Length: 481
Image: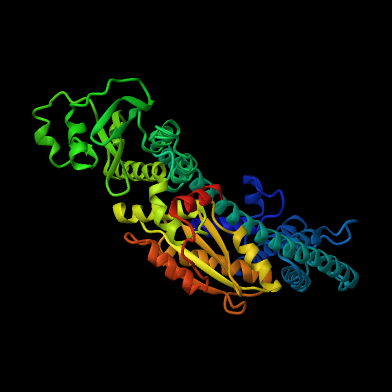
């Protein structure tokens, strides 16, 4: 701290270009009492030196140039008007002293001192003005230096954060939300006759990227019979062994089988040559097994509980897409006007809640039917997130927007409502209360998902009528919509 303050004083006492070592010795930085001491010492030494050189004219009068005023002008330029006037007073005192001892005879040189005083005042005024400007410039530069230092530190932190984020992305290329968004397009395909595992190849590519699978294959299951021909495969080809201990354990328990799973370690004593790392069931509906994902090779660091749980979630998400007609039958029967993608995602997220405990939320915003609310309603529709599924509804007197927010609990839904209200306040100068917008929320249930959705529609004052046609016809209409 002492070193820093000394450096600041030196910098403040120097002008532009006075940064060298010799200039600092010639004109050291000083202020306050130090400048007064320098004034007394330098003026006394100068007049003493003049007395030694010219005992009869120590103030150097009548030599063609007022040499005695050089030092007062320099002091005035360095320290301002006050120090300059002090040097003039010392010159005046020196003349009276030398005149008293007879070293400076003659009358008092009025014009000499008057001209010197004016010159010193001009130099002092110049020094004061430029001293103030330099002080302002130094203050601005000091602020800019602090900003530059902060910006440099922030840039370094950003670089370190970017490097860590890049390492994290190398270890885990995608998030759960991104992966589900990619799998939605795969699972929305209609099942072809005789093909149970539709979209198996693109699904396996997405799963391999998310879970870092190096060699894996997907096999269809019909009842208790596992097909020996892979529906899709990634990485080097390998043969399927239906007698492997992991395959047996997966078929018996309908759970993910790996070497650390309960019940596998003891059985592995009878099958010490198991070739696989993990076997994941592709379950749809009420524990209906439609396929097996056999993983032969994956990185050791990826064989973790979180990664295997993600693998199970993705398999369940894909299985619900394969069996979408069964998964959405109850919703389509109870709510004929429900969009297909909304019903499908609602059924999937209900299953995710039941199997993995991952929460999702439906947010319903209810608007009045008038022209002033149309712009608000359209803006809210445009502001939904990429993964959300929106379902606009219109009744006789009101209009509602149901937003299905996957993987979002109450906190995420509340943040979404705050963002929507801030947007309405910024663009239209209103909020939910002023615009008479009703807000309703529903956590996607794990069991009996149809009844809570119907109750939510009733709270939004949207009448829900039973399906007027048989269920298969209603499902066909929904699929074409």
